[in-house]
Image 1 (cartoon, rainbow, N blue to C red):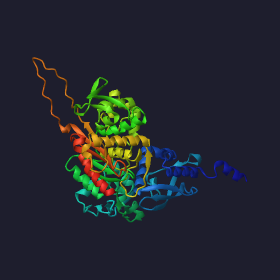
Image 2 (tube, rainbow, N blue to C red):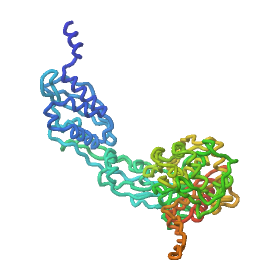
Image 3 (cartoon, rainbow, N blue to C red):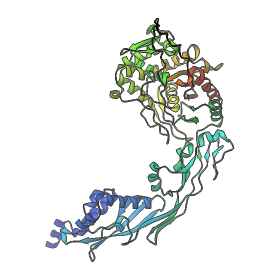
Image 4 (spheres, rainbow, N blue to C red):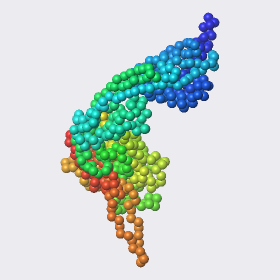
Length: 547
C-alpha cells in the first residue's frame, strides 16, 4: 500500500519516462524549445537550438509529415526509452516507427542524449533521412465550357493564343515557394506553375507525388504518384477572346467578371498583377464614401471651375476643363475640382475604410494576384495627399481586376462577392454599402456613359454604367510664365499620351448586371478615349456569354 502511495506522489513512472513523454508531446505540437529543454548539457553544447530546430523541420519536410502522434512511453531499458510514433504524411501515408531516446544521468538528473538521427522516428545512429520523389502527369486546365486551356505534357490548347494569354507558364520554383513545395514532396528540379492559371491552380494540377523515404539505405515508406483530376475554371472562351483582341498589342490588362458570383470570365495581360495609380476610376470609392457619410447627395452643387487649391497647390481638371454643377454631373465629367475637396472632407480614416471595404489592402484570394493598396490613414499625409488619394493619385495603387471588382460591388447592390477562378466554387458575399448608396453610385455611373467622359463605352439598347480614369504618371502642368522684353515664354508642350495611364471600370446592363470589367492601358492616354472602347468590346462579349 505504501508503494502505491509513493508512485502516485512521484507521478507513477521513472523520471526518464516523464521526460521522454514531455519530449514527444512537444514534438507533436512542434514546440522545439520545449523539446530542447529536455536534452543533456552535452547535447545542447553540440547543437544549438537553431540547428536542433532546423534538423527537425528538415526531417519533417523530407517526410512530408503533417502530424506526429506518440504512443505509450515504455519503461527505461539499458538507458533507453522507446516511444512508438505514428507519423501522418502527405505522400507516404502513415509511417509507424519507434523513437529510441537514450538518456544520460541518474533519476531526476537524467536527460535525453540527443543526436541528429533522432530528428525522425525509426532512424539509427549515423543514418540520414532522405527521399526520392517524382510527379504524376500534370492535370489539364479547362475553360468553363470544358475546352482545354492547357493539357498534356506540352500544355497546348485548341484555343491557341486566346488560351496562352491566361494559362501561364511553368518553370523551376522560385526560392520563395521552394520550401512549401518541398513540404508537399515536389522535387526541387520539377517544373511548376509560375504564372497565370498554371500558378493559380498549381497544387490542384500537380496531384500527389510518389517516391521512396529512406533512413540511410533502409526503406521506411514508399508511395506511387497519383494524378489529379482536370480543373475546370470560370474562364469563358468567348469573353477571353474578346479581351485578347481588344487589348491587342497594347500594354495593360483586362479583367471581366460576373457580379453575382464573383466568377472571373477573362484575364488578359497584367490584369491581376500590374499595379498602377487608378486615377478617376477611384472616384467610385470616394463617391461611395461621401454618400455613406452623408457629406453630399443628389441636391449638392459645386462651383464650375477649372481646378481647386489644397494646401496652396493647384489641382486641375483634366485638360483644364471647367466643370462642376450637380454631384451627378461632377462625377460624370470627373471633376477633380469637386472630388479632391470632397476627399478632404471625408478624411483619411473614412477614405481608407471605404477603400478597404471595396477590397484594397485585401488579398484578392487568387494566388499570384497583387494586392491593391492605399496607405493607412495615419500614413497618407496632409490634406493635399488625402485629396490626391481621393482622385486615385498619390500612393494609391490598383490592378485592373481590382477596379473591375469595385464596379462589380456597385453592380451587386453594395455586396462585395469573393473572386474565384474555379467553376462551381461557393459564393461568399460581404455587405460594403447600403443598397441606396450603391443605387445612387450606379445611376451616376450611367451618367458617365450617357453624358460624361465614358461615351465610347455606350452599347445600343443596353444600359451601361462606367467610370473613366486618367492617371498622371508625372507632372503635366505648365509652369506659369509672364513674357518680358528680354525673354519669351516657351511654347506649350503638346499632350503626350505616355504621360498617363488610361482606365475604365464598368458593368452592364446597369439595371440587371451580368458582367463587370476593369481595363488598364499603361501609358496610353485618356480613359475615355482608349480604355472605354476596349471595355465596350469585352462587355458585349460578356453579355452574349451570360445571356
